[in-house]
Image 1: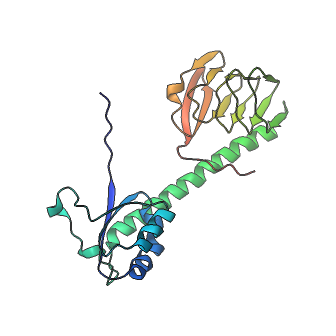
Image 2: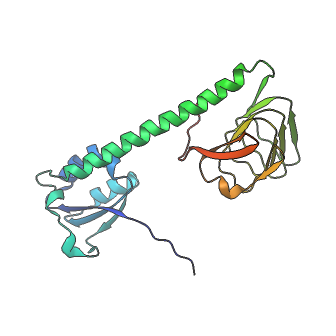
Image 3: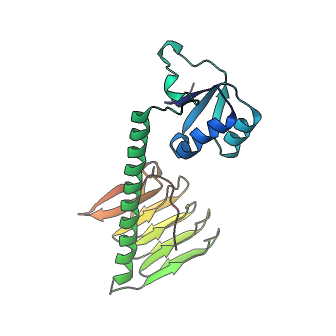
Length: 228
């Protein structure tokens, strides 16, 4: 038997008037509730349902939540526009922290790419094409690959390596470091040592050689939008 336990955030709202009041309250704060279950009670009409579905919110209507004695709805009543300010402030602070962290990680990635570009002893090769099954790419130096490596494809570099898309084939890198996205099907050998895919849990991982030891650290834990 397999099981998973989740922590669920719920925004419970009692609608006592019309849908205009609901949308007027909800729209400016909608980004804060993207990961919440919206539990609606009261006068829920088709316009409200359409609004939530069009914007990708999960919701339920007139259903009791567990431990109802602990639920207080007066802070989320639409007719006077009140909301739990402390919770909103905590959510806003969390979003700001995540945004700052993401910018820092992207700067680290940009710095790594810049380091590749300024190396005097070898050229940086940049490729933006799929490495298809059966193809072998050999680079004497550093490689920045802006596409995926399909199953049975092979990429070999004597220098550093960055791949921005999923790898399902094989990688052989003999440089000081490499960066790779989470790629559970990849066959990765770094400086003669096979890398366990279970250690590549994040959206972008840095694999580097220091003092004859291989270190794997997360660079970015969430989804990346690569900007040319």
